[in-house]
Length: 401
Image (cartoon, rainbow, N blue to C red; front, side):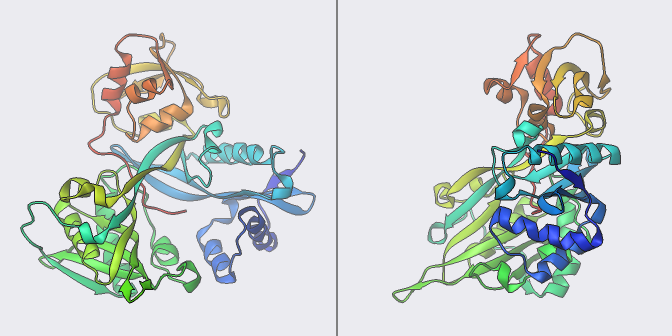
């Protein structure tokens, strides 16, 4: 189908944003549109027009993503939708291609997203890169193993104080965990700390709990409580929005606090796969953890992405990379501390999406090969590649976008 894909004018932007309502079946409040316009650089919003009618959108927020050994610029892909009247006509493919070309021209080597449907983005070269756990825990069964008792203090703080101290904890964690994004003061204010009533989904307001050791902030929890009383008994749930802690000991105190809230039956929210909580509790089963695919990643500029991360071994492996969607990445690459294009014989063969799944350290090359996602051409190359990409802990992304 012939459509025009372009940046909307200032006058067209809000109408284009409203068009996505029909794609997702939701209504955007005017204050939300104001919020999104403040956060989204205008030249990063793309709209597909059928004549003068907006029929699809995509956008990308500018992020710095923590990768093993450093940070790289990444486009946070969001606002992706096509009207039901215009689906299955190739519009999404055209928008994705245009967006990746623009990110490449901007010098942003990575693209990241949360998928509304997991089956969509693999065909555009995105791979699962930072899985997460969903927690739906039974509060009554919570107890800590070998518990020496609480340490430090926990304070409930207001939004103004949260804006000052929570970023200190977050940034300490962000610097060492692949998958975290740098969060600007604007994003803290507009999204993570914001609390409009229509975001609550039947729950109460956001609460901000700060854990301190010797007066220093070391952890926090942002949460809501969804009240539920049945036949005189409290069946309420704690809805965890975000937790962060600078050490295992601090994380223990964050969860001790959340599981200690009275008149609550269940604790629900995301959990970092690198969290020690599963091994800290007497009854791990009671946490009811479920794996979800989490963050997806696309290697936009493979050369910049490979040279922008560190490696765990003094070695290199030659890989043949297939990338039909962004052909500038295709070919043979030497992966390691001297990453570059090469004419040497390939030792592994894989698709760009599968390399993305290994990039942050979520999966090693052996796991991908077991899933028939990689072909080993030289014996031992899988193990060497896995040694190169090994990270001290799994990646995790707490950012919503």
